[in-house]
Amino acid sequence: MQGFSLTVLIICAAAAAFIAAFITWLLIRKAGLSKLGNAEQQAREILDKAEHDAALRKKEALLEAKDELYKSKVNLEREIQSKRVDLQKFEKRLADKETALDRKVDLLNKKERDFQSQEGSLKAREKAIQVREEELNNLITQQNAQLEKIAGMTSDEARQQLMDNLIGQAKMEAASTIKEIKEEAERTAEKEAREIITQAIYRCAADHTVETTVSVVSLPNDEMKGRIIGREGRNIRSFETCTGIDVIVDDTPEAVILSGYDPIRREVARMALERLVSDGRIHPARIEEVVEKCEKEMDMMIREAGEQASFELGIHDIHSDVVFLLGKLNYRTSYGQNVLQHAKEVSILCGLMAAELGLDAHLAKRCGLLHDIGKAIDRETEGTHTEIGAAFLGRYNEHPAVINGVASHHGDVPMETPYAVLVQASDAVSGSRPGARREPLEGYIKRLEKLEDLADSFKGVAKAFAIQAGREIRVIVEHDEIDDAKSQILASDIAMKIQAEMEYPGQIKVTVIRETRAVDYAK
Image 1 (cartoon, rainbow, N blue to C red):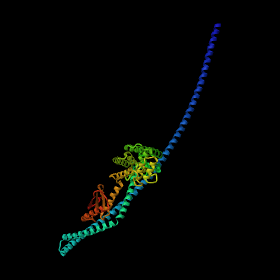
Image 2 (cartoon, helix red, strand yellow):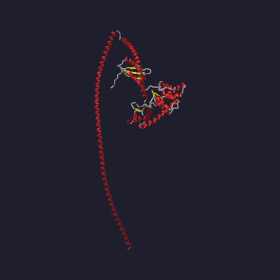
Image 3 (tube, rainbow, N blue to C red):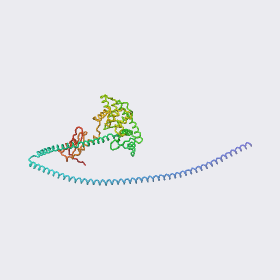
C-alpha cells in the first residue's frame, strides 16, 4: 500500500512538474511573441523615419541642384551679354575701318587722277620746251654765222682771241692785286699777327680744356644708362656728390662722359663707374663704398707712380710727401703732354748736360725731376706753379739749387746757379721736340670741317667731303649750274682759297665731280 502511494506520489509529482514546465513554456513563448511584436513595431518606425529623412534630403539636394543651375545660368547669360557687347564694339571698329579705307581709296583715286593730269601737262610742257630749244639752237647757229661773216673769222679763232685777251688782262690785274695785297699785308702785319696769336691762344685753350677735362666710360649696352641714372636720378646724384665729377648721359651709344677739371677725381670716378657697371649693383650705398675703395687705390697708385719715377732716375732721398706729389703729376697734362713723363725727360736731359759740363749730375737730375712739382697743387693754391713749387720744396728743406731751378725755369726770378740754366734749357727741349705736344682730336676734326666749309662756300657746290685724313677734298657740284669748263675753274679757285686760308702738311688734292642723275620710283 505504501509502495502504491509512493508511486502515485511520484506520478503526481512528475505530472505537476510537467504541468509547471508546460506553463513556463507558455509564459516564455508569450513573452517572446510580445518582444517580437515590439521589435517589428520599432523596425517599422525606424524604416518610416529613414524614408522620411531620405525624402527630406532628396528635396534639399534637388533645391541645391536647382540653385546651382540657376547661378550657372545667370553667369552664362552675363558672359553671353559681355561677349555680345564686345562683338558689337568689334563690329563697330570694323565698320569704322572699312569707312576709313573707303575714304583712303577715294583719296588715292583722286590723287591718281591728279597725277595723270599733271603728267599730261608736264609732257605737253616738255614738248614745248623741246620745240623752243630747237628754235633757240637755230637762232644761235644763225647768229654765229652772221658774226663769223661780219668779223671775218671763225668761232674758234674768235674764242681763242678772246681767251688770249682775257688771260693777258687777268695777268695784269692779278699782278696789280698781288702788289696791293703785299702792301696791305705790310701795313697790317703787326695787327694781323696779334689777331692770329690771340686766335691761336683761344683755340689752344679750348682744345686743351676739352682734352683734359673729359673721360669716356664704355658701357656693355644702352640699358645700363638707366641703371646709372637710377630711380628719379638718385644714383647719378649720389655718384656726382661722392666724386665731385659731372656725369653726362647723352645719345652717345654705349658710353657716358665724365666731366671735371680735377684729373685725379675724374680718374677715381672713371674707376668707380667701371667697377659699378661690371658688378651690376648700382645704388647709393654701393656707390659710396666703391668710390671710397677707389680713392684709397688711387692714393696707392699715385704714390707708386712717384716712387717708380724716382727709382728709374736713381733719386732715392726724396721726402714721401714730395714723392706723392710727383705721382699726382702722372694725372696732369700740359698741351697734351703728360707732366710726369715731361719731368722725367727734363731730369734725364739735365743729368746728361751736367755730366758733360762736369757738374753734379745727381743734383741736376733732381732739379729737372722736381721743376714742375707745383703743377700738382696749383689748382688748390693761389699763384704760379713755379712759386707754389718753390714754396712747397722750401718747407721740406730741399737743396737751394733745386728751389732756385724750380722758381726760375720760366724766368720769373733770376737764375742763381748753372743748374737753373740747365733746367730751363731741358724744359724747352722736352716741350718743343717733335711729337711732344700732340694735336688733339678736336683740332683735327675742326680742320676737316673747315676744309669742307671752305669748299661749300662756293656757288654751285652741292656737297663737299674731306677724305684720306684731309689729304683730298671731293666736291660734288650742281650739274645745271656748273658745266665742264667751270668745273676746272672751280677746282683751281678752291685750291687757291685753301692755300690762302689754311695751314696743312704736304698737299691737298681737290677733285670736282659733276654728274647727271635720273631718279624715278616704282609704285
